[in-house]
Amino acid sequence: MRKLKIKAYAKLNLTLKILGLRPDGYHDIDSVFHCISLHDELALSPRKDGRIILKCNDPKLPTDGSNLAYRAALTLRTLALKKHPDKRALGATISLKKNIPIGAGLGGGSSDAAAVLLGLKELWGLEDLTPPRLKKAAASLGSDVPFFLRGGTAHVTGRGEKVRVRKCPKEYHFVLVYPGFPVSTAWAYKNHKITKNWLTKGPKFSKMFVESCGMGKPAIDLSGYLSNDLEPAVIPCHPLISRVKADLLEAGALGSLMSGSGSSVFGLFPDADSAEKGYSKISKIWPGSFLAHSVSSGK
Image (cartoon, rainbow, N blue to C red; front, side, top):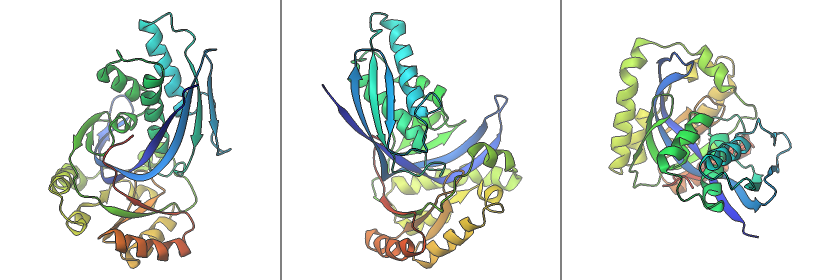
């Protein structure tokens, strides 16, 4: 029986600006998403009994309908049956090996969901499923899922569904720290307070970042644009994040930032050698540390 193996890469928010609350309850954002080498691993195999079975190496992660990867499989099957009612036997076993920390602001759940959509599209032979329909299905699952269909580097706006893929020819190097606790995305956004200062500077920072990245400028030129509006909402309740940021700078990072709604923090290093040295220092202080580099595509 055919088995398909896919890597689901994590992402960093190199900039994140919150522009306001939308009528649908989501927030408009302006952000630069950047895929990195840290990844989950998925193995997909078809089933003829129509069942969707999700297995995971992490017992803390649910494997039912509350799991985004599981819901992605159900969503794709529903989409397929609208056009191919004869394919009622579509099923799959999904084996998920989690390496990306959960609730860490790295998009692991969204990346897994996108990997399932792409993988099952191929596994089930849904060649006529167009990219716009797949993107719409991704957006119905979560704000970050559309980005992971392409991955790489992107300027992301709206609630996350407007994704402009941008060139990033240079490989950048990072050290990540997961401090050992999750942060609720909903809680972080609820506690965020928008200021006029961020409303004016936010989109400008993202634009300058992707332009610098597209020209292959060195990491030191990008470090001044690192920014995250959610830090003031999260750090007062989780002061360990400030300690991680300071430790990363002391280990040689050009800049350090909480990714997304946290709790993970990353440091941007000048090159691969300095990142390895920084990782050697940081991993002795923080067990949940990772060495990572840029990845040009999401899957």
